[in-house]
Amino acid sequence: MIRLDMSELQTPESLDRLLGERGDAMDGTALGQAVRRQPFSLLLLDEFEKAHPTIWDLFLQVFDDGRLTDRRGNTADFRHTIVIMTSNLGAAVQTGGGIGFARQAFSFSPAAVQKVLGESFRPEFLNRIDRVVVFRPLGPSLMRELLHKELAGVLHRRGLRNRQWAVEWEESALDLLLRKGFSPELGARPLRRAVERYFLAPLALTIVNREVPEGDQFLFVRAEGDALEVEFVDPDAAGEPPAGPEAAAALAGDAAALRLEDIVLDGEGTRAELDALEAEYEHLRGVIEADAWRERKAAALAAMAAPGFWDSPGRFATLGLAEAMDRIEAGLDTAGSLLNRLAGGARADRTHFPRDLVRRLAQQLYLVGEACEGMAEDRPRDAFLMVRASRSGEDAAASDAFARRIGEMYRAWAKKRRMHLDVLDETAGSSEPYRLLLAVGGFGAYTILEPEAGYHVLEMPDDGRTRRARVLVRVAPQPEAPPPAGRNGPREQALRAFARDKKDDDARVIVRRYREQPSPLVRDGVRGWRTGRIDLVLGGDFDLL
Image (cartoon, rainbow, N blue to C red; front, side, top):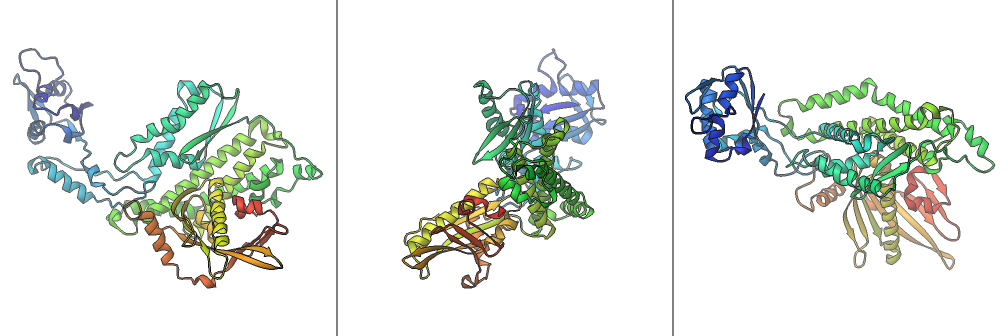
């Protein structure tokens, strides 16, 4: 293989590097000499468009007659040489953003790339090329493979490979690196810089400051806002056994009777809980390994290769489906890896385990299960959520204040469940009712939020009567198509999604009633539960009760 970086040949004088220096002395590096030495070669002309037009004209003869004459009159035979040129000219067509993790308006067109080539090179040059191969944008599945490859290479560096660490990545952390490490214009090139900046630099600082525990450690990497947080956990530190009169029953409890939601909320790290998590993992593994799952994914991947796919209106739904299935599979693999590290090997005989790890694993399985359920029912995946104070005959100030608390409840929920949350709009609530507009994405986002649509009512006793502050919550599916271009594009898309929701506000159900005095009480009329733990509900755990 002979490789030429054409960006180094941007002047007319660069011709000497291909034909040999002027004069008698030849250093043996000329292109013709290299091909004469080995006629059966692969010649790679990397980033060909960056070379000087004089260089382009030189290759007209090579591509036509298959020969090149140097400055001493020696002819090289290129008839047995394969010549491949690469070019980034097509990248200039992608002016509107990308797909997948770069959700902006974008329509890929191979014809547009061919048009750019025709505007850049003369017809007689293009006519000598046997075939033009147009590369499509990086898909979400390939993005994840590249990221996993980069992370695997990072952990084999000399400073890390000798440490007894097992690294587990939450989906929120991977999503952050994908958002920061890919762009429509630069492709995957910024990925390594994103890993260096958001993961390796903070970890190196922790090591230098001697803040790293000794011995075998779990490293849990998760996203916190626009940063990664690394948590060290000793896997061999046995969890504290449950205390109190029900301790023995908890240790020997019935795994089949345990709910994932209960383990997420109040898990104690018992063997029964771990057995329940293993059973749930095997159930979900059976779902994604079933023929129906594999056939559906194969059909989506096959559709991408169909002629005209990238110009079809349905391409976003197909791409979104394939991306979601990849994410679910990766999320279940993460849970399986953690489950194996937590309960495998020498730890198989334990009766109790670190409760934080058990709760973390339970949440991962809970969310993957919600995503699988939504996939099986062909439900939307991501959601728009609107919180709006209702002032019709109510105390306006109290309704605005309660609406803010409900908005904070959903923000806390998204943070706990590692959802990706964007605030699209928020009004202060003075002359107009308070309103909060959110875009929420993640495992089971729409499936979990859909039952929240309706009125949330705060009941306030006041001198023998009850005042009420009402808040309307609306939930709409995010379209698969990217939002319109511009900073306000996502907000406009969300408002259009709610405008298509024709439900009459007055006909909406009361989802929950909240009471703080004289004794705390929350009654959920949709999910069918009641609790005195109003702090749990407003703290974002409404979906676990």
